[in-house]
Picture (tube, rainbow, N blue to C red):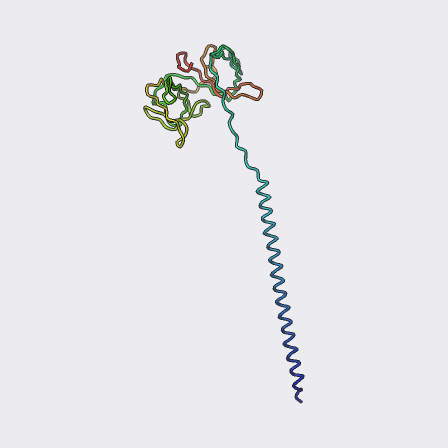
Length: 220
């Protein structure tokens, strides 16, 4: 027996309605899931960003150590002990300087212009009235504490500083001497010396380097 047309239409509409509801529910679930996933991911990114900032903030920048400037003293050795030397300064006062195992001692002797070369260090005396003409030069080892670094040199000039920033000094006719490593025994009473020392907070001087000069040195 065939079902009435009205019943068939009702069932067909009911099926379509349920299918529409199911589709709507599925869309809501999918959208909700996407929204939840987006929220979780956004929170994760914020957390990662915050953690990165915290790490960057907490990371300490290494402190670069700066070498203390040297105090230069020149005079005649008045007394020597196992751990100090006392020098009579040019003005007559006396200065006691501590000597340690780290103190470098060099003796100065005759040298030549060819000794002035790149990567050495020098002390120089300017000619009278000139800041760019040397009248006397002492060539020091590259490890010396005193003096200026030589960037380049030739028979007539030397450039002090670095390859990118230097000062050119004329050395034509300059009196040149050269230093070489020595021991503490080279420091004796009556020696002419130049001392490069570090001053402590208490005011004491600790020698980093001692140059022992010949008595006829222009630097004495």
